[in-house]
Image (cartoon, rainbow, N blue to C red):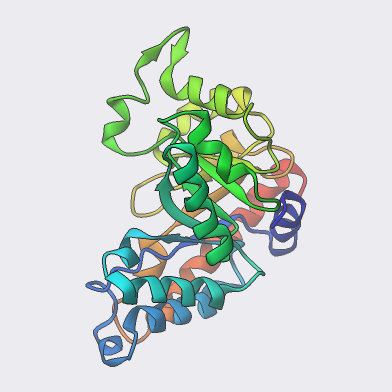
Length: 271
């Protein structure tokens, strides 16, 4: 999906919601466990209930890889079920030497039909560039994350700024706002003003709203640009809104609540 197509989806749906399919088999409703593929049945129901209200789905591959071959099949079946109407994210946090990253890119962009993959930039340019060589595909590079461990490296002084600031400035020159996004955690709301100055045109994937306590209002006011420029991810708050037989219905209701609030904030950037 191109940037123009993504922006048009945001405009049409009045939403920049990304639903995270962190589908932990130990947390899905018990009545689904008799299904041939419980996680796929869960995902399909969640997707059907939320697709009207979101523009993106993020599949955290760890919850699928942990189930071995069957999990990989569920992952593939899930992304194919989503189809091309939504921006799809493989939250895999890949990144290795060039020839290995090239294979990772082929895995998620050719063998699997994802629009984007999250990438760790620690190993430098040759570990990120292979993800930027596929037209219409995106690298979503870790910038400033919301976990406690961000203090260990990302927020350390490096040169004339913090390490995450160096990452943003450097990586933004490897690709463009047409194929590069950054992960910036919602719990780092006060940093968005400076981050937007460093990367004024890029999109950000923003996890941490909902169960992790990030403020959608605060993020929207501080991080938006003229094209909206943010995809706000909510996972547990939506997909595990209920553990009963009404799980999909409740997921749809929560997603709708996010969409309705987002519609208000989109007027800030004229969309």
